[in-house]
Length: 379
Image (cartoon, rainbow, N blue to C red; front, side, top):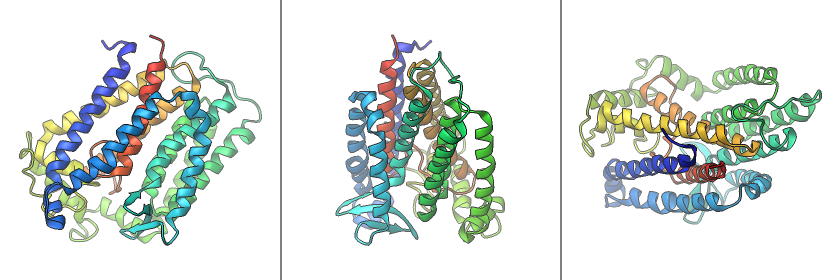
């Protein structure tokens, strides 16, 4: 049985396995596209190591050694920095537009997605804010049980709604509703675990469902994506092409897979094979057994994050641990679900595995904070 004092070591071990798996897999999956575009098979691998893994490890280590009280105090400043970067997205010389969406900030040779960093910053900010409103230490392990005052609606519920409203507006402009959903669900989990009245959560969920229907109905491309999810045979060469090719890749993997580097779908048949559809190529090359190992690692991350949150005695630490764990697992669930056809195509990267510098850096910073929280637990 894993002892509480060993939680940080086991978490570090699981994340290290994720990174080794992601780098080795990217080396094979990116080779054809890299060779076709740049004349070398390792361009995307080197780019990921240079602009994703290396800065992610450095910043993650800093997040591990910096006092959590300092992180809590500067969380409003971090949020302000992200808000400024959101504005930069839409400026002509700093914003980057790809695939018809404005989601990147570009300076010289550096491109990053502020949305990826908003995920971890929103967790830190909301955890700090709720700690200040509801008090400091927790009353035992598990879900917080603080009593709410009579004016909780005005002092807690309404400011939280304002925060969600701003996030909705910002991500609507970026045409990134899936990321908005992940952020809002994570925020709602933190809000609920903080001990707020249950009717707050029910009211927010009801309003969110109405808003979601409106976003799908009144945006043609979202309606098309949802229709192709329900009926993938309607437009197999158009809107349903990616999901159909993903299912072909997954089905071709069988029990043990074709073998590493032996995928057929990565040779231009499956769009976004290095990012959105990474799991499909992984399933084709490693089969059911490889996918089972990958899912087991995510479940291990879930259990370790749950144990860290459960044994934390500071409200800020506990809420942050819950938020990080839920965010990573929700993102993995959405990616895998959309790849196997039980969720609409989302564009959400597979945590720790998929190509992309911004999400890897943000996730490693989150892991550093989670390790920092784990080492604060009384041995």
